Length: 346
Image (cartoon, rainbow, N blue to C red):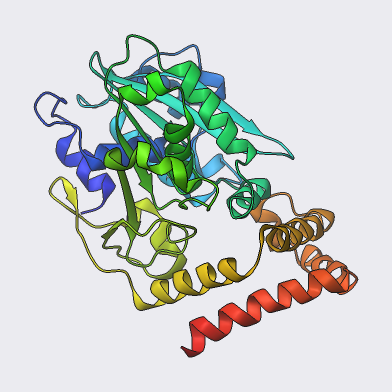
């Protein structure tokens, strides 16, 4: 089974009949990849889904990333179901500009349960850069927005709150829960980081405040969730290998839970190698490499992942890299040489 199979099986069961579980967490984490900016006047998933699916056809939507396509299919299966149709979705936000990529939505499952979902990285290149910036910045812009979002969206009437997200969204769920208003933190009962990065050294001192509520789920072939500091994983089986295992839809389900597994040898090597490189290189070195490489991509005309498909942009990347300063070149070469050696030959 995968997530679509799960919602098909449990679509006719209310949350009273079948309690909220880790798979419902995945449903909301996946759903928030869709852009609902034009549907804020609608309230329930049924109303939003009916309008969205009526106005958007998957074959006509260009530049969708894979996560959004999966979310579209998921919405088709849940918008008219007994389990999900009456859930209220509100406080939807999306920001995508040259400084940040951020999106979130809140779901009122019933009077006693609220789920806040943070979107992972979409097609915008700035979103992927923010993932890398987490290695040297105390808080990146998306993390600051997530904290602000949580502080303003949780009300005095919300008593049982679950926070979650996939990829970068999982990290935003973690960070916002750590840094939010203490009174709101008391309302949080569970935090799901679904294959998102962990913490940097500047953030670990606050982790104990939410540790008992936190679950970090990663697939057996994880390349995102293993980044930064966090070794307390729940490893689950994926039907795919490599980067494709990052896709929630590839995670294997048995009845109403994820099938557990062991972290692959390749993922272990990548985790150990990158963490070793981070340990021996200070924040300034990390910043130089990330900022300069992003500037090269930006100057090459690459604003989103789809721009990599244009051959002329690839040629620009090599040309600009060739002309970059020697310090950046040395840092970049050292990064790839160090990690390739550890991953391929150890």
